[in-house]
Each structure stands twice: as structure tokens, then as C-alpha cells.
Image 1 (cartoon, chains in turn orange, purple):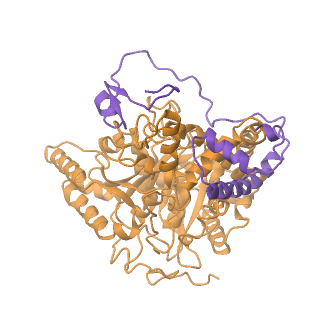
Image 2: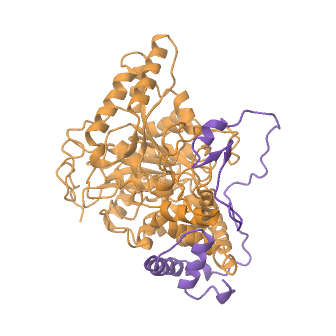
Image 3: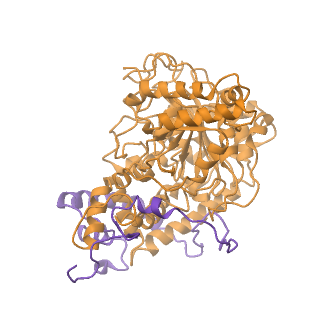
Length: 510
Length: 107
């Protein structure tokens, strides 16, 4: 079965919003089209855990009434959006991919959800994710895995795999995800879409269910760099409800996209090419050539400290998670499994409500914070974080941007890493350093691998460097090799074999 | 943790995993205990590179931002709707969260 039969490339969010704002298209038609696409193929892809058909139609009708009354609904007028299921939506189930929150309806909206509504966007559903965002394949979701629209035997990446797949399958032009160690960028790469992890503090986390609070950041998925910029411009900016929100003006990215990178210096991060699949590494070198052709100076940069990022991350993030997830105790919300006393009730609830990966990380974090080990593990990891941040700072005195792969491989087979946690964690090796430093980074589709599946290249910038990041991303998007994904698989999308019938493997690759 | 206090070099044991599970309010069956002990040991072995570094002169970094003690004006504002919040609770009595007994005596 083909996940996206005869899919045509979706219209850009910018074009859709413009058509709705001018009355050329109705928001109801746009939303109905998205809902029809979801009804056709979501069962196969499983990008959504909740589809909000009636809510979305009502909301779209409201947008159309605003247009008819001569009011501007906003820059995302009528645009269907998928929202990762760890972002609170008032009165709408928000599960975080976990049985422990099954059926829970938050009593408030996340700030980013509120900003979407104010911009005229229409949330059409909640996107599947690894349980509590812990995973790199969307297979740890308690509600079943999401499948990669390019090849449904492969994972979409994770943890925001539902958001990435929803855009790649052409269900929606835009989606929101969250990125703690690569959870936006890695699935964006594996699904052939654009994914931006903004600077820590530049997008409000009010209403984002916490995983690792010093690392979590909300960001956009889109089929194009321009649409990602448009969505970032809507969701970014200070929020008094988030005490880690930066109180300063954020750049308006949409206006700088055409500025190019002539005169900038791009460093190719050599450590991130070690152990990377040869076809992925080749695309990184081609991306570097594209930067040079656009007038940038390209040089190799070595930051040996990033080699310690994975170990530091898998101590810091579980430590913070073990604390954040203590709130799931069966008292105030979500699942309760009854027992005679409160400790037995807490234990029975958590044992039944959490899946294996979440339990593993809670125990790892509890251990890393426990007496006798906190200095050797947690505090040591925080010192490594300083090393990495300082090393990045030194590199950014010489270069404006860093370039490398987003993921060491293209999309891997469902089930292939589920029983080997360390192998799964290694999928995040290139994305983690930016989270530890709090820096922005973006994954841009750049051709396909030897298997015909999408490759993403990653651009990294210093804090608040989104402006430069997006200029370079636009250059790479324009220079992406033939056969590169344009957001949605071509008509007659790939079947169960790697490099299936809809995607042409690029000539000349091994 | 008493068994190996101050000796983080040793591999994590079944007894330690059982203790950590108890602290985290998780119950593990024997086969789960076996599997988690092995998996956590593999992950911690990978972290040995970090544990072995001499970082005595490097300050820890808990957070990417330098902001601290963010305050707002002490103005009254509406909170969440009480009934809406309580409607999501597993058990409620007289506008309060109801839980099983906490102390040893019979209810």
C-alpha cells in the first residue's frame, strides 16, 4: 500500500495564508483538504494520535467569517498545523505519547498554541511522539509507532516523528515539535523536511510538558525554509509565563531569507563526519561546496569536545527527567491505579503508566543524581557542558556557522534499534551539542542517500543566530541535489523496498 | 548506595537498580530487573569517558542562559478554573484531590 497515493506537493503555508486572506480560497476548503488527506493515509503513517476534524472545521469557518467581515485573521490564516502531543491544548487530549496521560485534557493552552490561533492557523490534530519525547524513532509511543512516509518499513525519526511525517506526507504544510537532544532536527532529516531548533529561550515553553528543562525547546517543521521562518516568526518572542523566555526582540526571519551568505565563513565540523554513513558524508561535502559557490569561505573546524556530548547528554537529560516526571503520581491528573496506601498507589500508577524507555531514563537519572554518584556522573556532565559551550564560543570567533550531518544515517528500519538503547541514542550524536550549548540549529533536506531516502544536513549557529542560520538554509535549499525531497514524496511514493519506485536514487552514489 | 559509596567505577548492580527503582516509585519484575541492569550498565560504560575526565578547574553549567530570579509584579491575576482542573483528577472530594491513606492507621 502506498502511503501517499498521487500526492501533489502541498502548497506553501505562505501561499495558502495569502489565498485565504485575500478571499481567493476559503479556509474551510483548505482545512477540508488537509482532513481528507489525513483520513486517507493517517492509518498507514500514524502521524496523528488525535485528529480534530470538527474543531478544525469550526475554526476555519471562523477564519472565513473574519475575512468576509474585512478583518485580517493573521499571517497563518487558514493554514492547517499539526501540534506535537506534548504541547497542551485546552480541552483536547494531550498524552505525551504515554498511557499515564491517556485521556487527560489540559485546562489551558500552551503559549505557542495560543499564538498559532492568534495568527489564524488551524490545529488539525495532535502528532504522535516517543513517550515523553524519549526516543529517536517514535517507536516508544504508547499508541504505536509512526511510519516514514517515504518508506513505511522505516522509522520517521523522533521524538517528533509524528510532526515530521505529517509534513512529509503532505497532510499539513506546518507542524510544531520540541527538541531536547535532536527531536526536531533528526526526524526532519529522516523525513525530508525542514526542522529548526531555535535558541534556548527564544520560543515560550509554557504548556510544553517538561522532559529536560535546561534543554527543551519548541520549534517549527515545514516543507520549506521560508515556511519554517514564517512559523518561527509567529511562535517566537518573549512570554512572561515562561521564566526562561528571553526578554528581547527576536529577529523577523522571513525578511532575511534572500540575503545570501556571500562573505560569511562556514566551518565543516570534522568530528561530526566521523562514523557517519559515506553517502550522508558525501552530501555534507556537497553542501559545503554549495556554500562556497554562494560566496562563503568554507574551512574545516575541529571541536574535539563535542565527542563528549552524547555521554553528558544521557546523564543530564535523564537526571532532569527523573525530577520532572516525579509529578506523575496518580494524584492530580492522568492515570491512577488504586492501592491501599499512597506510596503503593504512586508505585502501581507509575509502573502501569510508564513504558520501558521512560522507566530506563528515570532510573538512569535517579542513579546519576544519587548519593555517591552525583559528582562522578551528573556534576561531571555539567562540567563537560561548560567545555562544549566554551569550545563552540571559540569556534564561533572564527566562523559564522558550522555545517555537518543531522543524523549519521538515513531512516533505519522499524524495530532495528528498539532493544539496544545505546544504538538508538547514537542517532542523536550530531544534534545533542547544540542543545547542551543552548544554540540554534536547523536541518535542511539535501538530496538522498544510497537507499533513495532523504538526507538532512545540519547548520549550527551561536545563540540568537537564527538570522544567519536561515540565510544559509535558504542557500542550501536552492542548491539541493536533484532527487531531493521537496517536502512530500513524489506521486507513487516508495513501497517497502529501500529506494522504492517513487524516489530516484541519485546517480553516482555508492 | 552504601555498598559502593564513593566508588563509581564499579558496574551498576542488580541491587542498586532495585534501590533506584524503589526511590523512583517503580516496581520491577525479576526479568525487568535483569534487563534494565544490563542496559543501564552499557549506557554507564559509555559515560565512563566523561567520568574519567579531569575537570577540576571547570565550573559546572546547569543552564544555557545567564538569567536568574525572574520576577513579575505582584498583581492579582486569575488562575486556572478550579472545576476544570479538578475534573481531570482521578479522585476528588469537597473540591480537593482525594488520595488513599498516607499514614499507617486504618482509614
